[in-house]
Amino acid sequence: MGTELERFTGPAAEARQALVRTIVADGGLSDPAWLAAFEEVPRHLFVPYYFVGRGHVPGGDASEGAYERLWCEDPDPVRRARWLRGAYTDGPLATRVRDGQLISSSSQPSLMARMLHELDVRDGHAVLEIGAGSGYNAALLAHRLGDDLVTTVDVDPEITESARSHLANAGYRPTVVTGDGARGCPERVPFDRIIATCTLPSVPFAWLPQCRPGARILAPLSTGLITLQVRDNSRGRIAEGRFLRTSAYFVPLRGAERMREGHIGGLPRRAIENELFRFLLTLTAGSLDPHEALSLWERERRPQRDRFGLTVAERHQWAWLDDPEGPYVWPLGRPRGQSG
Image 1 (cartoon, one colour):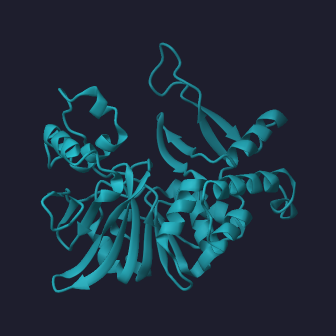
Image 2 (tube, rainbow, N blue to C red):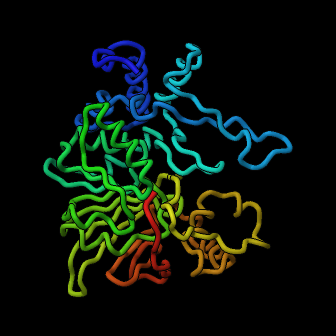
């Protein structure tokens, strides 16, 4: 995959700089520390192979013919060049497929940049990442904070083994743990920041006591990104915050019970096909009837994601519109499952 010199020169470096320019032009990487991380961490070392969709084979199963594998050592130079170009496109890459199902990916770099910006890390912060993926996000964190302050957890030993190898090849050695991300990482506490790179059905309660007061949690939930501030009050540890306006689609937390949208029969197509309504439908699944959710959505003039928030206490959690003490509040189910 190239020499150390080629990390900063040659086609890979040129492709990386082009990617950085794309993210900057879109308003990302305003922090010089994150700009340096994206400029210097070689993404292609974390995706020595990946899969691209090539459509369903007529008459075959759902999984048959779904993905084409591109890899760094392909004997065909045209396909190798295609692999390298793809490694530096501003898009997600499917890095692990099992039985036709996507189980791990490398996220879209511009979305990663947005999430890392919103994580609001400071020098000396200890960060826990849930979902190791390819290891690329952990490398960006390690570049910014140093290896000793970064821990990444994944339930799948194949994923953690490959992430550890990719990180070492790129010159980074954060702590990589094979375990249930819903349990956090008790042996590495306390944390100043927790970032999840897999969609959650709800926020695991085990994370709160592993955080320092003032810590921040950033995680995909429903089809959005929730940012929670952790604090102590008279009732104990609590985390509360709002969704960002942006959409976010990630591989689900492995083993977790997925959020269901519920029965949507009879709902108008204009609502069902609207991304913001489907966000609300998923967020309220099991608490609001879909028709009640539609009434709320229309009454409140189709609210954007950032009007919604979440409160997590030691034994329960609830989503809300505009105000955690307001009239529009509904519970989320108790989380369980494993990391992805």
